[in-house]
Image 1 (tube, helix red, strand yellow):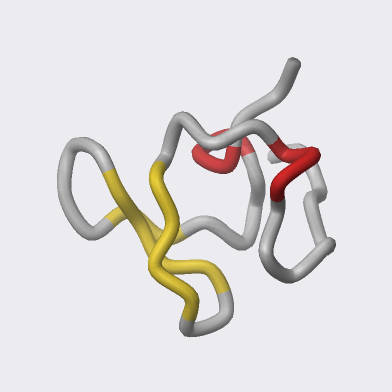
Image 2 (spheres, helix red, strand yellow):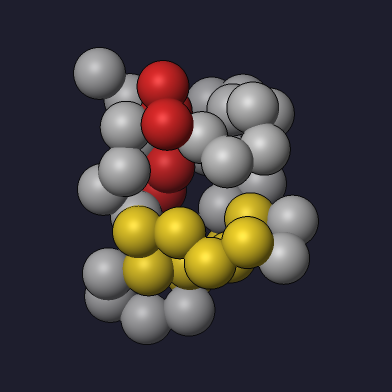
Length: 42
């Protein structure tokens, strides 16, 4: 399953987490749990 760090809206903060539209998310979070429901592959 794709993960948040594969999304074009994901902006890395450090090695394990990033920002998505102002939401801090874990990079390895499955896209089915996407807080903004906007997953688009890079």
